[in-house]
Length: 564
Image (cartoon, rainbow, N blue to C red):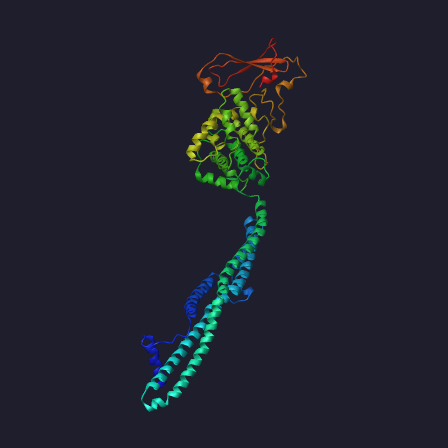
């Protein structure tokens, strides 16, 4: 009891600084000791947070662990949904294929977490919960032994200084007790010093755990990426093979290739419906349709359905859907690449040369764009022939529909783009509609795909059956038609006499012709060794000038190269 009391008093004295404490550790060991608790704390916190990042349950076998992963449950739900929907729809196919890919990702994740647990979590836990606590426990044991040694030393010192005979007699026994305590201190000190030095030497290994974490994560993401890159092409093939895809907002070439069509479905469907019920409708393409009806029709066309009977009674909705399709094309029907050429052609002052420049620009269109533009222009020309009823003249059609066919690829607000484009577009579209059969002489079967009922609207007769179409001779026409230069067309018949009247295509009005009435204009045309003069006599009450061919027998031959 007395010995224990003395020890407690000694500890109290050392605590409050009233007694000198024996320090047995060197400075470097004390520095290592001070870092121990901090390393243990940060290792414990890292272990705790890393465990919270894992999706599986620690310590379970791999099969059970994978079943508990959220990715596994997700893949199971997707595959079950795909089997319920079946292969009739694209959603079912995609859910099944993507669910299989998610299952592979779950396997990669499970293997990654098992590796993380083995290589990082277990060593960190060993460091924070076993190795450092053992060292700290030894440090406390050393402190206790040092306290015992200091207490024995103090008692021995007091006995040697005491005049009490009884205390002096105990000096030898107290000396033995002090030596024994010192021996225990030395043993514990040596063990603690070895552990502290060993900890310091392994600091690089402990730091390596965090590098291994990043390496394991990088390896996991690489394997996951490889899994996805192997799965996505197969999934994409299935996606691309699905024919029922939206047409609105899709590139024309992509839509035609995907649907194996020549004419875009919204274009053909709307034209067929308008031919049936809309040709006599006043203000077609100008009067707005109901928003809900228009939205429903666009959605139906996006589904590639041919069941459109309910929309035949609302031609304005059909016309609105056609305008919307043209405007939502990522690239306009008349293309960004030819915008400058179209506008330059429309700025040509001479009407004949302007028509030829427009024809050249039209001939430069890509094949798919040209075919769809021909289809649309033929329909618009047919619509304009009923302009006395529907009030949609070529000019009116060009105003309301032209900005949906061609616009500039430039930045700015919609209002700015429309203002910059509409002036040129009207001058481009109007003459093309007016001279549709000159630009596109081929007949057009509007029911190209055969999906729609034939219209009951009677066919429009050709207003110019004897039209002699003359285009730039150096270019090839549509459908393989060869437009040979005029100088080669009659070389085998040099003495040909032209007896039939020659009628040229009507030319669009220009402001200069409307504002000033000029004299008779004559133009000389030379064909090989023959020549004719075309005389234009403008009149006040005709919508476009008449052209008459007058044979010339006494005209000197001209250079054919200048006849263009």
